[in-house]
Length: 323
Length: 284
Ligand SMILES: Nc1ncnc2c1ncn2[C@@H]1O[C@H](COP(=O)(O)OP(=O)(O)OP(=O)(O)O)[C@@H](O)[C@H]1O
Ligand SMILES: [Mg+2]
Image (tube, rainbow over all chains, first blue to last red; front, side, top):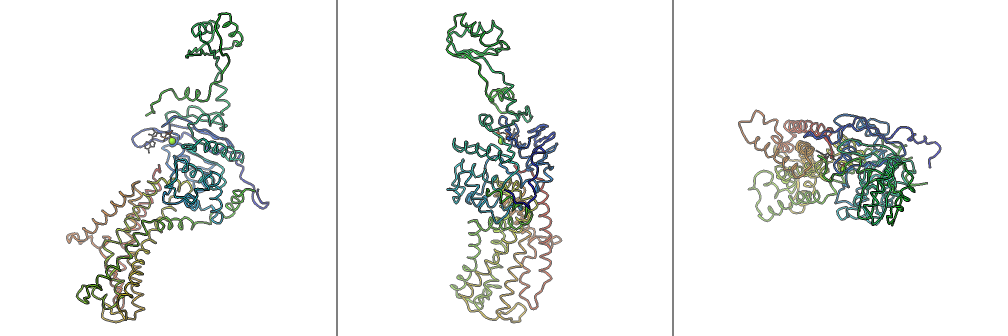
């Protein structure tokens, strides 16, 4: 709640909190880790930033936060040009970059206090209280006084999230926030992100958990080999995935033959199913045809592919990291 | 009303006022570490060891310089301990702390968290340098205090016979010893600057310490080579011993001033280099 004499909060809903134009990073040695990326993250969105290992997500996030200089292109954060305006902008941005990093010889609480003291806009009078609240939110209250050296991986990850939560932020930039968390922790972080988003914070998060994206993200972008291959709402991404007709049957060959006969395309046969794109034909026609062909049907219906399939379709099947 | 929103209001109202927090935190980082405390402990032990050795040997007067005067006047234990720590112990301590400063944070990864906080690169560097200067002073003052305590317990104390043959009161003697401690801590700033710069180049604190100490050794060797006398006045440690001029009456400031000028020059050059490096460096 704001007191009457205070100016109203900045109209965060207007300008997109993150805009990049032609953002490119070429590392020494010539590798182009990020290649002319044009990102636009809408205000109030929960934005999933996806891509295989080595596709340039962390490198992009580092450039967003002014940690590394772009080879070319520009970054605007909360309407201000980075890295020029970083001292002005970054206090409003909570960040978690590439895994948790702390002073191992200090307690979790002492670590939070130091990072907060580094921000000259942070009020020292409320520092301890804010640290306690942040620790509470990530479920670390009981380990607040323990040296970080003695923290488990998941506890460190939680502490890293707590750093981002030390103040009310307009934007959170989180690099794989659920990395190393247990199922409860993952769920907590998911709820936390929802809660923050409903308070008006824009959340930009890289992740490999596509189920997470389906559950919490409103928007998503997909990186592949340094290039941004897709950027849209999650609903659009999903809508583009055509539902597939799946027939569960022991008579695989016969079923496939029948579906093909009616014009189904992209047929795939697994151990127990035949599936394919049913085209524009209503599926009851397929059911009738299968019954007429004496195919034993154990299961029948349209299935919507998961985001994972969309992801693989965009970034390729290969397991080897791109070089 | 949630806590964070109250806090947020406070933040906007008082924005830009809390510049000292980072400096205080930096001091806590340097002095809160067991490593620093152990180092200061070693420095505190120097007067104790010297005092005990002199007490046990029972000889008075046959040792050279300030050491020879300790048995007669405990106050000289302070000066002798500072003088004996200057060639090795103090530079080693400064090397370790300055080499650690930026490279330590880079290796932990905390540098990126500090910069996104945001600490500001120039401001973080300034805080590191101030903390280093405070450490230099703390190191010499540790010896001063320990020397005072041990000297007063083990030996008689009284009026102080200066190098120029005049005698001053114990109080003035203590004051001059304090000035010596301050001058010596200022003499360490050039080395601290080198350490800070080297530390900005790498993410391996041990490498930064080794390189800084290597530079210190090389400067020492160069100071010992007569053929290089043309550049001697500009070498870091050439006038380090000038602190003894504070025990003349009146104090002889000429050499001390030149020493501090050289320290200042090293500090400016290497601090600027460290700044240029840190503000352009990719932090990964
Ligand atoms: N400092 C660096 N010097 C040279 N190359 C680098 C550097 N940092 C990253 N790279 C390269 O840039 C590419 C992108 O790396 P990045 O860390 O951005 O990937 P990522 O999408 O975050 O991957 P992951 O999912 O594994 O976290 C990789 O090929 C990596 O080898
Ligand atoms: Mg990454």
